[in-house]
Length: 411
Ligand SMILES: Cc1ncc(C[n+]2csc(CCOP(=O)(O)OP(=O)(O)O)c2C)c(N)n1
Ligand SMILES: [Mg+2]
Image 1 (cartoon, rainbow, N blue to C red):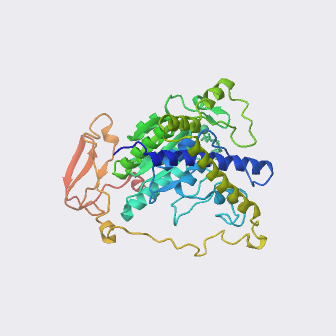
Image 2: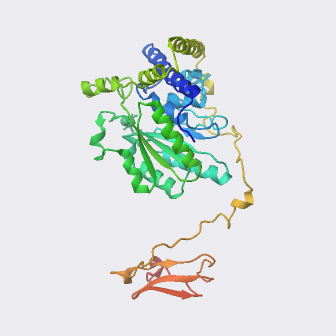
Image 3: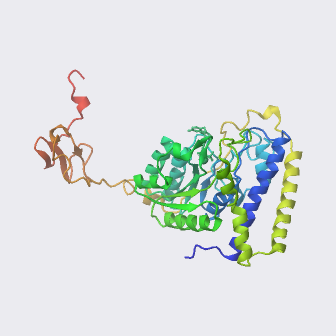
């Protein structure tokens, strides 16, 4: 399968990157007019990552964006008005004004899990969604994003290891934008490529130029199809630069001028535009049409958001707890009986041949109850035990070895 975009896909990638930037530019103006409730986080210079990766997903796939992934929301089908109303905490927003920023999802139609503020927590969640969908027989892929700073959390490692051992159809995008607040990436991890962390979980990884939308899309598409084919999770490190401070309050004076200048010369939208023009995939007229379309859409959606009411105070407590408000039910796409125990139970594996035969073997109380045996160890297969002389196999043993705790006197 060719991972290179068609002419139409090139146009889509360009359109969504421009839309992503224009939506955020509009929100900066709204923020300065004090119309945004809460913080405003910019993805300026990172649009190619949100757009290129989400564009590799299909409608049936699930994703969980973080705060700098407004581009991914737009690609998945969220209209700009939802992003505006949500940031303005309006009653017409997806959360009815209950939450701000991009903290909203759409479980029923677009398959979007809301961001979680605790960095890294979306990784086990999306690994779980992937495993759950596989259990239902759905051939979907899940995706989430994490920053360079977020990749230092414990849950990043726990989640990715869990996804790996379960071979979850899950793609993790690591946006290495060189900074976590004011901490440069080399002060967090003493390795050049954060993608190398995948080796610890036995999964594949890619490093990609995060400012090259075609490279991002082609890499993500390959990863998504490999995950869909059952080859397990994949980590993609996309190298880029956070072009503004952490949020609107941060002037990011700690960023060296030369560093900013280097990345300014690699603006992802300009790079793609140059490619489109040089390949004769776009001309000045086409560009102007795209810009006019975006301007008209955003003007309409911004006006709608500005003219929307704030939530009525008397409804503050409504919808905070689930009162049967949603109708989500499992969508089985394979016979339920097929996935019910015992057929679905995990087969025991005992690959550690030679275990407990060397130094210190006597201290090891290994016990392995093979498939076919009952809880007491009575059954078909051999029972593996460690003895002072090494590993012993016995058949049909009546009593299992008691765990050390229950052998303590007086208990
Ligand atoms: C577990 C956890 N620790 C700390 C924070 C506070 N925090 C929010 S954003 C952030 C920096 C994140 O940096 P990075 O992951 O590189 O993402 P970026 O902001 O660069 O996109 C921190 C420390 C948090 N939200 N969650
Ligand atoms: Mg970062």
